[in-house]
Image (tube, rainbow, N blue to C red; front, side):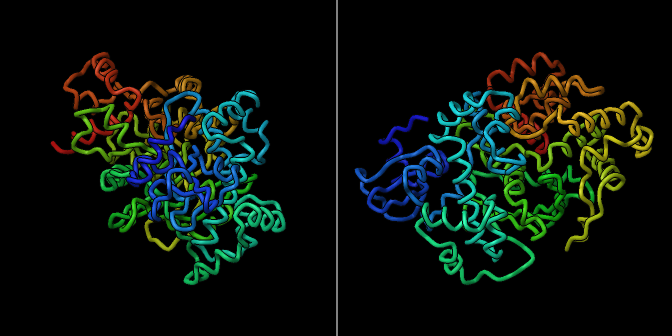
Length: 479
């Protein structure tokens, strides 16, 4: 990634939030690196060095600022193929969704060679995948030390370190601090059953519109919306073990960030939990870039986001269940499905009672049992076919997956047409150019019943057509 020092320095002096997370500024006189929105007095230009990632700054010998906290910077969404490949690898490393950190495993998961992965990764982040992984572990540990009361031993293992000794040594060598120093800097931390985090975004961010969308489609027992707060249950698998718990998300009243509360039962799987929340809430979006591409369509609501998925399989099932029926009817059916195949879960909230089933459990179900919930037998067979493909690993429904190959696999499933495939790509794959052009709402908003005309109109909105869909759907709510 090429950074123009003059542009970066101007953005830093202006504390321009549009650049937050897109580069980091390191100060040679202090050996500290910051986000471009840091509130400290701007350093002199000759003392500044600019890096495309936190890992690149740390590889050059700088430690993170304790005030602006680089670990809170928003992520980056990308449409470019090479960048998207590197981001996919980064996601796998960051959320520890693989059973080991070996580069060969990451490359195999993405269907590329080790050499290609190294080249794409360095072009995007300025460091090797191994260096990136180390920085992510350290930054997560720093966040947990600052924001939670978890014991240091639990923090070390939750962050992906194999031993306390390795954790302490790396923390001291990289950050020139003992882990306990950060814990002492957070004297209000107290043992509790809930872990609290902040996840940043680039404003504007239309929180009411996003949770209205999620609330209308919330799976009963699994999700709920209460006074502007989104809550849900969680099932996260790591190294063959399912971890269960709950989380809630609300906007911060002071920062461009979301406040995330996570049950302590999910402490061992915090990286994938936080990664999934980022995807669900579309926190990597660059709203200025989207608004520029959509023009007049986005002018009145430039902060509209594309809701993603906490669980790609869950969203895909929900999409199939919702074929040819209304949103409220699909919500009712999805609730029955979760109650029939999911796991009961105790939470502090009356509306959260169930963890959505995993693909393996649904794959073993009989079509007649699924159909009995209130759907045609053909649709029940579609759900089971989807579950089997996900369970055996032939279909992966995660952000940054290879788009065309995944779409082809989805279309090959019985009962999955273009609308369903594009909707799944839009949410579960976080594909910003997904475009369900046969959607009745999209056609109504554009004043046509001809899908070819919809496709033609959508050409002007590439590569952000998924955001155009959200604006078109939202325009119908105003009528």
